[in-house]
Amino acid sequence: MRLTFLGTAGSWPTKERSASAIALDMERELLLLDCGEGTQRQLFHSPHSFMQVRRVFLTHFHGDHFLGLPGLIQSLGLNHRSEPLDIYGPEDARDQIDRVLSLGHFTLRFPVAVHALVPGATVELDGYTVRAARADHPVPSLAFRVEEAARRGRFDGALARSLGIHGPDFRRLEAGETVRVGDRVVRPEEVMGPPREGRSIVYSGDSAPADEVRKLARRATLLIHEATAADDLAHEANQWGHSSARQAAELARDAEVRGLFLTHFSSRYKETEPLEAEARTVFVDARAARDLLEHVVRTPP
Image 1 (cartoon, rainbow, N blue to C red):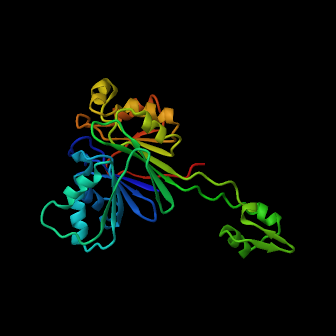
Image 2 (spheres, rainbow, N blue to C red):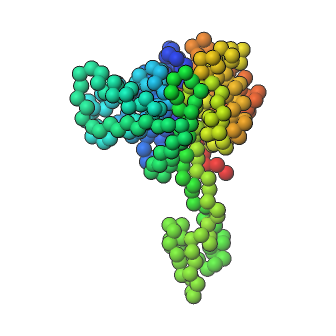
Image 3 (cartoon, rainbow, N blue to C red):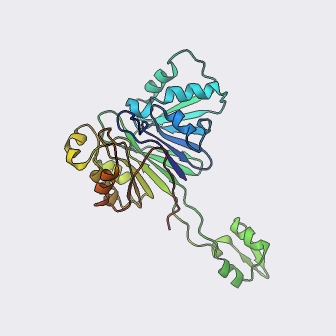
């Protein structure tokens, strides 16, 4: 699980920040969380190719979160893509994506499937799930939780040796096969530790502090939450469906997440260090994201 922040701007891009988009490398496939203006160009500066994108999860249809999609789709077609692209979004997704696919003169040469999600929906995918919750924003908006399936426990080599297992039989047990030692059959679960929790990432999209987002983020490995403003502008931000850096940190604390990244910064903030410092007074593991920052999401201990 590796994150690349492609854009961290709020509402419109700036010289320092592109519009909202995050690339999430799940090893088997590449996901996009939002696709703001300039996303495909940001991908050129990242370790990823836009041709690798398999699925796009859109939190809502304000321009700074989806206007990179028309260019991405047309570029994929011009580069002879044949694999399908799945796009997930809130309840108005089909109407909005139909408009995207009718912009300009081009021929769509690969399948695009649109999936409209309601709060509470779960999408089961290859080795992971994506859950949606309602975000607090003036238009239909979702937050997403991307979560791996539980991992097998760690192999206990010392215990296996004590049972008389040696050499190639180690690999067989690790692969899930049984092994015979004399008259005894040793099953893999006898020499494996308990299942390990899968990694999980929660992305708020645009949202004022929301109880539904807090519940979605419960004990997540990482929360990515918008922090449009500093706390002195929290009331104004909330009225427009946004959060302050301190409020994002409070939600992270209450949800008992392991780490927090702040994003979606208003253009009034040339530097994000004050927002990060504000968040850290509440949640010490808060960091301000920046464009093209990469982060490997580690397996929980």
